[in-house]
Image 1 (cartoon, rainbow, N blue to C red):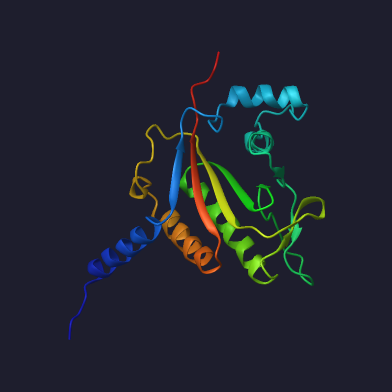
Image 2 (spheres, rainbow, N blue to C red):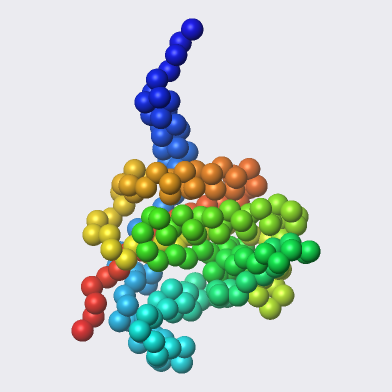
Amino acid sequence: MVICSRSQYTRAYIDRISEDVNHVKFTNHINDNLCFNKNNLLNFAIQTGIHVNQENQPYESYFNKQLENILSAICQHPDTKLFEEGYNFKFEPCDLFTDDTLYFVKIGEPSDFALALDQAYLTLQKLKSSNKCIELKDGKIVSPENFKLILVFDKRKTYVEKWLDIKSLNFLIHLSELRNNLSLSGINLHIDFCYETKQSP
């Protein structure tokens, strides 16, 4: 009888998670239109009339509206929907969408990104219970083939080269679970990493 130590079990578990997430493709956006710049976002918000005069600026809302133009998508954020008839639970099914893709956007660090993964997982459960279709903004019915997560680091100084560069096991566990469930449903997953650029003068 072979008895595995707790450390051996933990190492094997982490290795399995690492192997799972290595199947997920990601792109680093460094010098393109997905770069994140707060000054540029404020200017965009002012020019488009969505700027709000408050101390804590809603940069994520501004970024979603900017992405609507960049991606030729429809912005769902921050509209919520009833998750299930007969219950009062509401959820935000995605942040943006096109005919075949749902986008989930989060600014922060890996602990924040895990929330976007949870959001995507909840939307997947809704799709499973509704014949892979979901009703979104303005009554638009979407049957997505792709889930794309746009994750913006607001403090990170180095670029992600491999998944283990993200020092958050919680994030990697969430990513592994989402990847496996999407794969079973025939939906593709891609991660876009964005980084806050230097503030323009």
